[in-house]
Amino acid sequence: MKLTWYGHSAFRIEAGDCAVLIDPFLSGNPKWPGGWEEVADGVTHVLLTHGHPDHFGDIVEIAQATDAQLVGVAEVAWYLESRGIDGARINQGNSGGTIECGGFTTSFVAAMHSSSYPVQGVPVYLGHPNGLIVRFAGEKSLYHMGDTDIFGDMALINELYRPEIGIVPIGDRFTMGASSAALACRRFFEFSTIIPCHYGTFPILDPDADRFVAAMQADAGKVTVPEIGTPFEL
Image: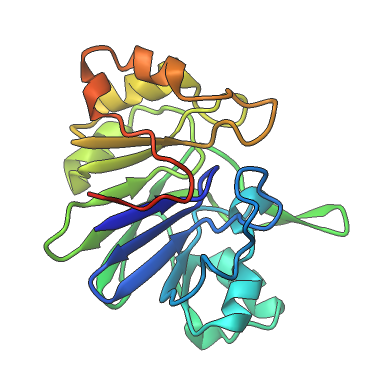
């Protein structure tokens, strides 16, 4: 499995015949000046954790330019259809469900956050936010937490899905900060690899992952802080 981080919560996962984008906030992302076109080249799937613009990103443009399957909750699906996307290309689910995506499965798990998209300054509700468990045959299972606070039922997520790779928001203010994110990882999960995200994008977020790495204490060696735009193998 190969991952590439594009800053904030945007990732590309390549495994088998699949090239998967999660939360493709590319245009307007201060940490990624390259736009969405190159990143979306060859993409087969686009997954959304929730509908906020810094996660929804360029999904409409990518959908118009590619044949990618789009994966999200029901309200995201309906909104994408209202933007002219063929509903047959949208693979929808919701909290607690697992769906077959062709080459991998996606399970929708709870996240403590909100989800909407502004239309002419008015927020349009886009369903419950979720974390996503992504499982490819023969690869380590991956949990993209989306945007969330720490919550006790993370223990059940671990019991049910046993994710091995954690993509964890750490930037504070809108998600967990360094100490609570580290506590979530240490108390509830048995990750072999932890990838922090949702930091450094805007001045109001934590600027780097240093405090998170320190808060991981003896498990700091599990943390991988990737270079933006540089693929790495897992």
